[in-house]
Length: 102
Image (cartoon, rainbow, N blue to C red; front, side, top):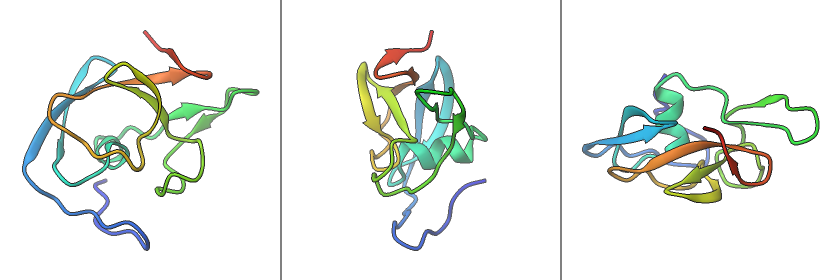
């Protein structure tokens, strides 16, 4: 499920990195976004709509929509489709406008 190419965004794979998503250890690669690493790990639901709580997935991959807002290292509302993965990141699903799913 790893994204190898995109019409707008380039994904260049570097060294292997470890990070946590909702407390679960996962691996990704230097040079890819958080969303790309989650997608490769089989995680399809990145958020839920505010009003009807419908699941939202990896959509635009360029930071224009709000389908990928998550809490990264304690900071809410990070657009993970454009935020690059880094070693040891703590990523959490966000509920609403910045609450952390525990």
